[in-house]
Length: 279
Ligand code: SF4
Ligand code: SF4
Image (cartoon, rainbow, N blue to C red; front, side, top):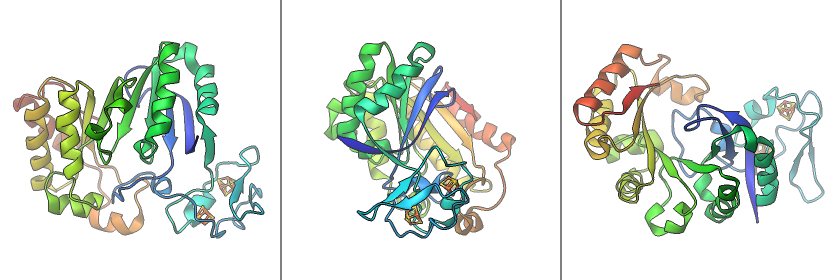
């Protein structure tokens, strides 16, 4: 069994509690306007447009037409990613569970667990299930970082060896959801309820956009009374860095002011989400 891995960060302290190894899978079923890693959305289609721009010739084409990336040569200049018109990356490794596990084992003495992220890691549920079953006996916890597109209720076995899900609730309301993430967001809200009832909701994150008072407030007013004190609620300030230029035009160049985000955190706490805080 193989899955496309964009990168593995051996030590991260921003992807869940404690020091964690973060595994970023390639591919995402959403197309969020504010995505900071748009190169993780699609798989490479092998068009070859990025090959000639690599300054160290780390990219080549295999006889079967696929793109080969030489990670020893790569200097991480990102020229290929800037060139790609398909929101993809040539810097993807198709890995087995054992290969990912090998990297986790190297970090194991220094970490509390692993976090699978993306892109959207739940595109590969068989892989995750096998990985979690292998990681848990090492005494490590497994967390899923998800955009909420996956039907968790339809596959409870995915959560058997998973300590919890960090869920993005980016938008509430079909119209704003369609604008922001490209669909009506109904599955995300269904997951919010299911993960809470299953005791597997690690945290919820809501992005606060500058000047979008109505949309920001409706998300916070929806989420806070549901989660109350049962999980963390991260109120995240919008930052335009890395966002695709065409979407920056709509969302603007401004970072959400801390005071504005703090107002929504206070609102969330007043509605019962006592563990709301700004990041
Ligand atoms: S990031 Fe690596 S593969 Fe991509 S262009 Fe730069 S050196 Fe080449
Ligand atoms: S990474 Fe993008 S530009 Fe490069 S070959 Fe793949 S699809 Fe084409």
